[in-house]
Amino acid sequence: MAAPSSPFAFLEDLIGRVGERLQPPAWAVHEVQHRLVLFLNHVLQQEPEAQDRLARQKGRVALFQWRGFTLRLQATPAGLLDLAPEAAAPDLTLTVTENSPFALAGATLRGDKPPVQIEGDVQLAAEVNWLADHVRWDVEDDLARVVGDAPAHAIGNAARKVGGALRQFIDKAATVKPASRPE
Image (cartoon, rainbow, N blue to C red; front, top):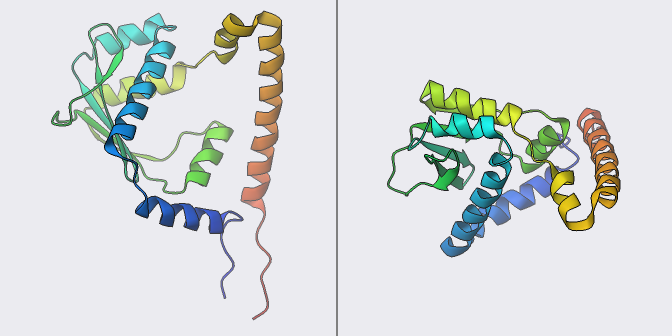
């Protein structure tokens, strides 16, 4: 009997089976996508260089895919993002090839980019890559507007410590090989 390749194999299998059977209603998907666009635009508005780069790509459509999830975004003349119409043909398709949500979470916590299959416009792909490399959400700055500078800094430090502990846990979990069981 082969040992599982991950300590999270059971959960991965369970999530996969549940995800195949349960699909959220279209209205919920649409609302989540709208909220994601609002968040991305909030982050982009803090980076004028990012807005300039996106403005040069106005009207271009990028399709992001992972498992059964898709997100079709269009660059606006203002250098922001909007949901593209379903009928809009994508200029660029980015498909995340890693199926495991745990592997994706681990890669994200380590600061790695997920494996992606790229099809379409090379220039648009280069701009998306630049955005992924250079645009970051300043959580502490947004939090400081709500609770003040000192508490936001303390919360930020605590979050960084938790993130570091999670990274260590993920690294250890990835390197631990399951003990073989006698048959």
